[in-house]
Length: 111
Length: 115
Image (cartoon, rainbow over all chains, first blue to last red; front, side, top):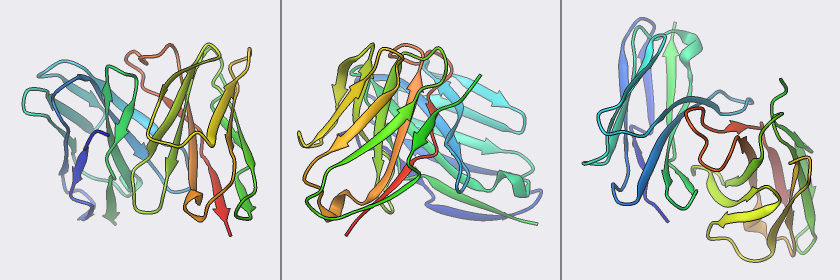
């Protein structure tokens, strides 16, 4: 079992603030790092899949970076909006096709 | 393009019973993975099916079993239900085993309660 950790567990920010969260994962047998956004009562939605050390991905106001050597990824949200409120999950994919998830960061954006 | 559909959405079963959960993959996807999310935890990998064959399994006992059909839809079967099996069960489909740049497409889950 792979130990994928996310911090913080929950976060409240004001509308317009920028924020970031951390995902740490074992760097051995690494294949890819996934980020998902999960709104209540909906399906988790893929945000990014990153594979290379130094990868940076961006989707609108959300971006992510990856450091496979030290085993961490950051997710950034610029100018948070109430519709960004969700749980953000990261998951590490090993060579054996197993996707190991962290427990998520629950973001609440206060209008 | 349809997404992933899971049925039923909610289910209550008695300890010791058997349950079957169903998942229809996104069109064009040939790989299905099942996850269990217990309260306060992240989703835990149960197993993956690729072209009707089991293609990886997590740390779950043999009473958790699955099937994938020629149309790539899938079933998760759990025998001899225990109270700890109460959880949200998520199905995710992908194109090929390693997902490429797109990640998994998830269903919205089946909430199983064992009493």
